[in-house]
Image (cartoon, rainbow, N blue to C red; front, side, top):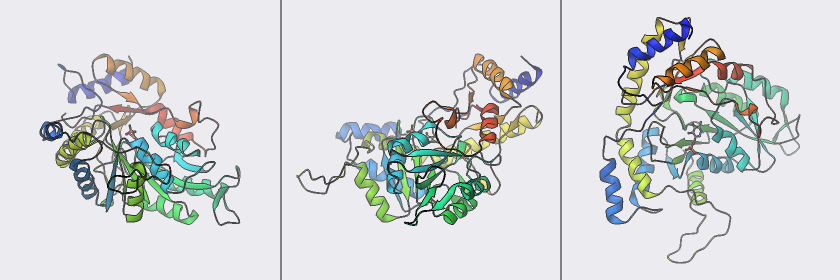
Length: 385
Ligand SMILES: *Cc1c(COP(=O)(O)O)cnc(C)c1O
């Protein structure tokens, strides 16, 4: 083990003392979870209908400051429907960061569309508005119908996915400005950023639609779950309709006139979610306090590892704390050493354009994505630390 790796492990040990193991992000059930789940079991309302689903949607919309939230069975299905609601169809292209979780790219594929991978920024780890503008100025043209197309592939570009990486908001104003200039609708993948604010606005309220995830390792969990959020009432109604099998309301008839999806969140999962959302402010306070301790701890070894701080004008939920190490060799040696002593650390996702099913997709210059993929290490971030 190099001196550098030893120094990093020592900083981690200072904050995460011996005597237990430290998962990357564990769920915490210290509120009304048992009570609400018991209520579902006692009343029999465990499945697709029930008051916790509505309660969860209302509580979530209010926490985010958006008009509507529609609960779904996970974040990937929420993305699938959000893309459809933006008009993404077969053989379209969707702009999407290469540095993201696989769900962002997979949901694009479910529409029969192709991701077009774009570069991120060193300040946010999310989409870089300047590089996006430069890329679009090269490839984007208007066709005779007035649609934006990629002149290199001939395909229509029908959406832009912005992902708030590890909970750190992208530079929303600048990204929206570029999207507006080229007339491309924005979907915010806010799966990681519940409780994160950009210039005082909660993430997920600026795009045409946004999605969240309540997977077991997210800031709050429903076991598995997701949501579509929007300020557009017609889109929210359409999202509810499509995610609940596109059934026309009727007392007893099964009326369906188009292909719908069974993507709804069960009531028993929503019950967990209501209890979790009650504790969101407390979770956020503890996560930000942990991030402050890491920031302080890593200050002393700034040449070896840099703690990733929330971007300017932002308040981040610090979903997953991240450090940047000098290179891939240091990263691998740190992953080995820390996991061996029960401090769970993880590299960032393999960039999308390097995966077999996505390596032939169109893409911008991704030099920084490749560099960051070699250097990012996520460190334990649970709200109970
Ligand atoms: C967690 C996550 C999702 C959704 O994942 P599900 O497991 O389907 O809920 C989507 N995008 C990103 C960036 C995520 O981190």
